[in-house]
Amino acid sequence: MNTPRIARIAATAFAAGALWHIISCVRALVDPTEPGSVAFARSNNLGSVAHLLWLAGLLALAVVTWRTNRTLARAGYAIAALGLVLLATAELVIGRSYDLSQALFTLSVPVNAIGLTCLGLATARHNTGRTRYAVVTAGIYVFLVMVPVFAIFGAPNYPTLIGWGITWLLVAAATWSDANNLAGRGAPMPVRAAA
Image (cartoon, rainbow, N blue to C red):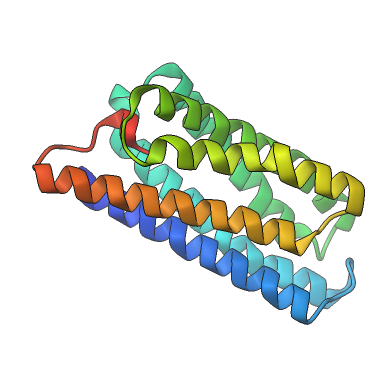
């Protein structure tokens, strides 16, 4: 299995998802729609693409690193993936059941953040590569920035969501850099270095 190549594919999925997410949020800032409207539902349906791309990147890395990952990293992958599945589901059902979608949003983002934080802590503990702080930053950003901002100003808060997309760009860049460093050494990507 060509681990650096798969890590680059994961990094590409992270970056594509982050850019899609950021562009969707900027579009929502420029052309706002009323929550609960058909246009708002369509916008969220399209937003699910970003979270499915993040999920694809996460699963790609999990597959190539699962055998040698430790418990905290495995739990992080599983919990973060569950959060992304719930998040994409919330965006896809928003037009049919606004209340269900809001409940899923309330649950999915913290679940994803807990998974990313666990994965990030496992990575930071055993890695000297750039991914060691990028993943934990994406997870902690939710608790330190998104939750307080949403509590004070309400959700969705697009500038805050753009910031979360930027943390995913950091994950993409760090994953790509680590994959390139490992490929240059001709070594398989260490499990603990994976985002």
